[in-house]
Length: 338
Image (cartoon, rainbow, N blue to C red):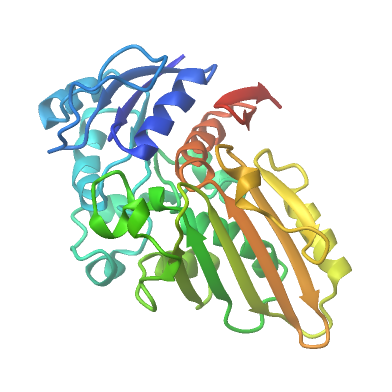
């Protein structure tokens, strides 16, 4: 079993990682650290898991890294960017970073994240961990950048259209997330009683360049915050090439995802739509589509749990892909052999 180190284990995503690693037949949970400066050191691990969250000081983290085969980071973006070079020097482990610290080209960081990237050489070699679309690179790299939650929902829906060369204009993505996407820290505007369904980050959200870079075209992305705890629903309108039919997309999406272990297809949106209630607390994405043939438009719908398929369970799927573990994630943090 591969000894697994988690850094940032006190947050919502870090807690999900602890559960997934503990239930995994090929992984063994080792040290779990709080993010640097966190007040959560000494708190117990999630219910049913023995141990406490340790103080995330650099000396202790690097000592634990020497003995790890897998390192998972659920840390702030700039913290990951600064910590990963030290981890690479002190460990031969596979590193999966769940922050935005290694998802974009170096030139994008000052504008979208507010800092110059401190390790452009490692950034250039990092692999984007969109499982099912980048598996060959995931198998070969020791530094994987797990996609963001909104990008996961959006890219899983859009990638088949891009693969088939059908996109013929600017995709417009409207997506709504539950409040857990804002993290565990206490922020007045994300407290449940203060949240009313509303758009935010209009024309300036950092997930827009991430989606665009890894899709391969420009787009418009508008996120919304909703008064529910977890989940993302993305509705995407895409101009497509003339002659695109519903039957063509039925075949395309079944070809892309018919064997995918964590993608469920709902098919024609006129008949059934993805829904957050179907994916919350599960590692699955649901995707549906409908074609407006007279106007050459496609409407896509994608639903995920932002903490699982949009973060923790996809990160562990990256581990499975890298090491060749033939496992399907199950609701309730379980795994079954493929």
